[in-house]
Image (cartoon, rainbow, N blue to C red; front, side):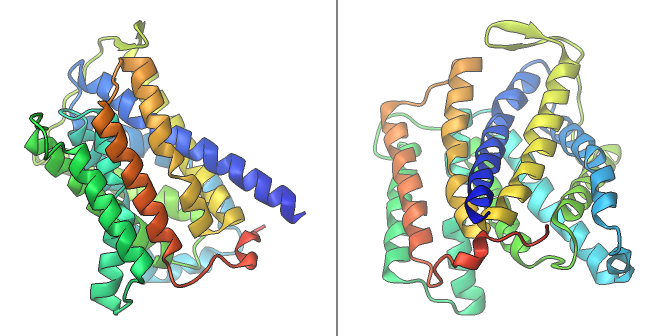
Length: 316
């Protein structure tokens, strides 16, 4: 039984990583025909939140009392803005001027930022192995940014990618501690809808630029209707990605699932190369490998090992 849960958990994690990895490529195709990053993100997360609403309601059967706590609603809103809206909006802005893989690799330094936060905020001093992983990841980032070469990346794009990294760090921190009595799919749907509502309000107030286009996008050299790209962005790279990610975490545990999630970077590189012809340079690929190695070493340096009971389902 445990072996079947482990195997299905790995499958769910792989699907989730591939789904998330597709988001930058599809978003780039919409941005190139005139969509603003704000409009693309708002459409993506709002539609995904609505799609997940029905299963979220189903998951709350017998648990409606959890919503009577005002702190739960505050947690959902905080989760939506910090863990959903910020990283996705910053990431979509970053891919306007950076290659998809480069932007994602910068974002994937988030686990190192989490270690620094836990040390500064909670006094959880990292082990020497964790510190070594952080140094390796820093060297990888330097190669990605090509600080030692003659090629320079767009500074604004890098700043947005670093913002996405901080938002992703917030995602990891909040996911571990936000509304533990709330089913994961309910938190995902509520967070997506809260983020979509917040971004939509910002658009109505003129704070966040909103622009759309009904022109066809181009993926893999072939035209695709704009609505199909939006549907792909919402249903596959958000709704499917979140649902399978939750299923993977429930079967593998958060830490083991996060190891498998590193394959998102590989998926992003493959999708960007196959669909829009983007391939990082050899130096950037080497830097990306170092970032992944560094993040893995950081994970291995965590003081608590992965426990056998983390392979059990939290909720049947």
